[in-house]
Length: 384
Image (cartoon, rainbow, N blue to C red; front, side):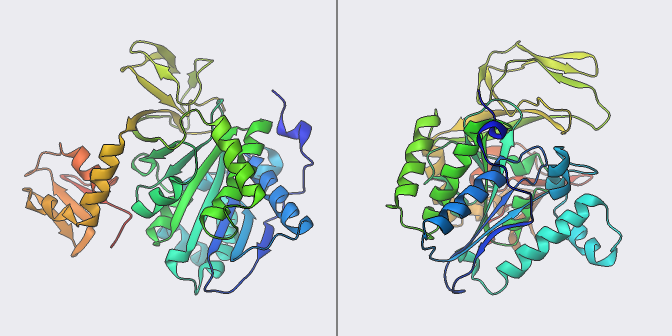
């Protein structure tokens, strides 16, 4: 397997990769690459796409922006330097940027990214805005999409012929895309493949063209788009399927964790299979299941995830229930109340209610959890 470094002309890293500005009433699409410093493939792909747009004089019907994430970490080829740039996005940290100008390296990176995003978003209708975050994995992998579970995110991902993963917001705190969704904008992550592989680069290029077409920046009949769709169909083993995360193996900063060699993304595994070791203790699979994003790098707090497929019927039921605002059913359950009259935030009193309706909450989009002493607050990204 050849690497991206062997086959791609590598540009110098810079914050703004490309910026094509059009009427504010047109779509606004923003791509971010390299938010982790050991994941440069997305940056190279965005540079190539902008080079081709300029060279072939391709008309873009909207505003298109591409930026680089963690510049300093990319230069050192490390996931992050002080803290994970994709785990610190929340209102409190963004407020701290203005209150405390003496910032560490990742917070300075966040300030620079947020300045570009805020200025770009200002004045655009929320429904016209979409942000795509390009990533790669430490293990071998087919390309896939990760989303917070909103119907609008689903509609976009369903037009890209790769698997889609729900539920990441239940297990991770502070990803950029979750914060963007909280602001009311569409945001999707695309994982192109293994960090250094040329395949990930080609997958990223194909995705960028296709994502632009889905959002109306370029015709779906454009040769670049047709080629991108064909490419992703060829490399994806389960195009259009949806999965949800059911378990995350947490790794603390000082823990010793080693994954057994040879696992790949989406691989089926049997109960009892040796997965790795954690602080000297062997870890075995507890289920016949699928493993997702096994960790084969030094940095990172996610040892691996477990996923399961979601049927088309369940997706349809979920869409129906949200369309008809059936979250009202939850409020009939003992111990379940709205928070401050906001139906996208509900509180479950564990002294009254037994928290066993996980699937029902998921159907209605309530996936993010905040644990209190005797309660769980559940949040869904869709606020309508």
